[in-house]
Image (spheres, rainbow, N blue to C red):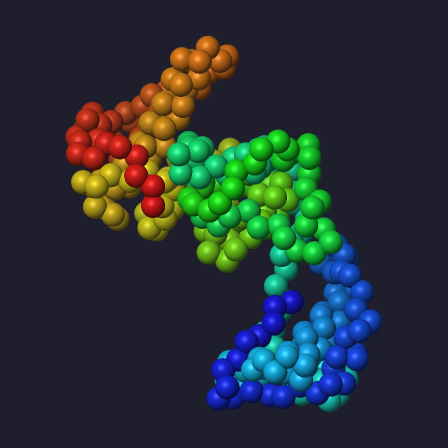
Length: 322
């Protein structure tokens, strides 16, 4: 649970008794998410731990951290929630100034048509270009949280792993369960490794993956088909119409948000895939890639701009990463 940092202008003091209550905290488990009764217990203990930490900061370290009374958390919903947790009465009066819900860093993840792994999250010159991209993030893979920080899935993430931050793409396929129909994950439960989750768990990208999930669901419902049958380019078109960015590649002579910009985003997806395929062929690697030419012919391209492709790539044709 996150500690709340306050300004000096409005703060509630925390007594030393909160620290002693926090001394018997037990580790949380997956039951914290899946078992409502266990979740209430763990949320209560998390509140005690937070208040105990604030007591230590104030009385032992002399740090001006406390509970901000001016954030508006102490509304009816939060007061009822804290009452439901059966907190110590003296601490309940403080706890109403905490956020309504704890921040959940990880949860169960689906097994999807594709699993996003650390090796998919190279940045800048090492970035992988994903033709079916439906969201983007830029956070580094952060997995440093206590006793379980070392516990990565070696069958998914092993060897030399990418480091640092920078733009990366999230493919359509990680939203599609391998075997289950009629279900779309939206946030930390997409098909990904634990280490990849360290980069996709942040609120900026979870808003974008949530938007992608909602778009997939809406298109599936509108067409009366299963989510796996939705065409990725249809999802991309809807997201681009909403102002989303789907690829790390930009062109200096294409203004953001225009129809030409949206078409360039779509065409550049296939262009990068085609370049990647050519590099594999040059190295003598096996495999084929249908690429842009085979998948988005005139008549299927939402913007009908394939004949003008040369004009789209005039000017600064080099890849430029945001």
